[in-house]
Image (cartoon, rainbow, N blue to C red; front, side, top):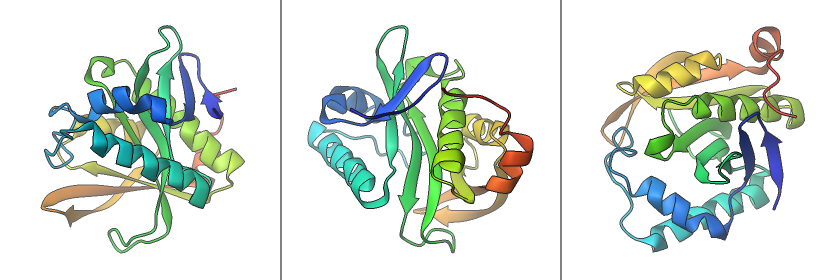
Length: 186
């Protein structure tokens, strides 16, 4: 199983079929889906489709969301990383989106920021991407705070399935000048 990055507290590796239980625990929680349209999964078959989609992203685009593993416990605590968006979103198409989602008991520990820093470093250093985008519900202050800490700036808002979403952007040049000195992984 490929490990993409490690931080002080986390291992970021490819998502595997063995992550089904952790992903189900994550995505069946209504509180996790509060700003995602309030549509938590009900069946593990839905998670198997998510895993299949993510693994296909690895094949098709060389990147996809990663499992976030807490080193101390060895627990699957959520996912983070890039997703290649090849459908029009807010007037953009064929771009890389940074995202993260954690099991509720791991909120507020800095894991989203820590894992996303490593994902950005991988995207800009290893993949040589020039731009990264992110999206957050306009009322999800926690997610807005994480993206802001990472250097992504809100460039506008758009509506998606009845939700008002912030669109964030970070250029590789801005990241290199402002954030590349952060050493999030080894």
